[in-house]
Length: 187
Length: 187
Image 1 (tube, each protein chain N blue to C red):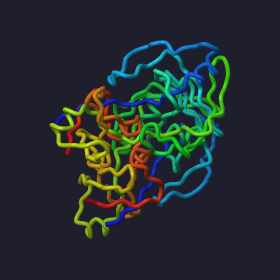
Image 2 (image 1 turned 90 degrees about the vertical axis):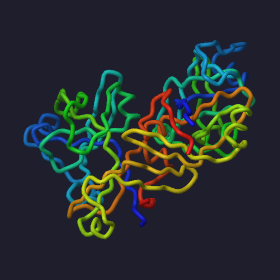
Image 3 (image 1 turned 180 degrees about the vertical axis):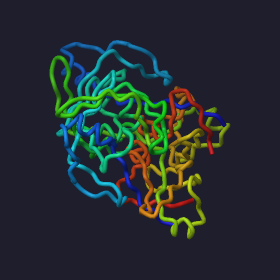
Image 4 (image 1 turned 45 degrees about the vertical axis):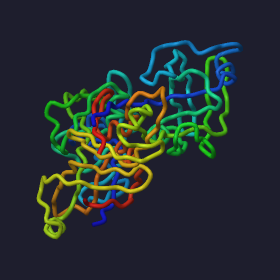
């Protein structure tokens, strides 16, 4: 079973209120490009994300606006700015680290929201049935090449809107020598 | 078989001539601390490493001086400064990318030398005999925890001066959620 890899760079999900605090009253995210997951887009808007030891410049915001802020970064990024990134499933930010978000029209102190996404495998219900997998199941995925790796604890996420894709962050992709669009195998 | 993890951050190996070009005529590296491999030390000296897209600040130099320059960094680091880091065994820098090295007393254009070290497992000849392994053999190593991984293609390096230790770079360690001194298992 061949699966395409989608590599997540650091990015932010923000509420509409936070977008306005950072970019100005009444501001809305503007479309830059699609991503493979059809319910989200990459916006043109970028912010700086500051921790006690440094700043991550030009962090892309993904749209549309969400109910709660979530700043996704690698453990490499987190160490660079002196915060902890808990390894979490998307939207589970309780008790995670805070950071300062800096936009052109203002800044926000986030109390929590910094996570490194748990690696996960998106698929539709049909694909899950074909593969005999269920929501939240942990599977292993094998890569090939010089830096071949078997990633264990890959969480299956099922949704009608999902495209079949393995989501890794750049630390994981680099550790395995993977590029966007490379293929891996479900073990 | 439990093996301790040693995580390599970006660092430089330089020739004595290059050290003098960067730090001044007659300059020698000064000792900062030991590393587990007993024939090398971390020096107090740091340089900046510049590529077309950015600069890695404060890159530590490892001593003693070597026959040839080698700048070890992660693929994350390499992308940040706009160079390619070939995945290579230490000292195999032929055809690798160049960078600019910047020290307090001068700078050098390196024609080649940027590598990401192949993950490898150091051991003594006695340990190799006990484990039934030979120089250059590729083995697999398994980690545990939330980001559990099996690293394949780990190269066995044998030397009387080596301590039994798995050497990973920070991308690899972060992808597996490992810290210095964590234990992994030879598969």
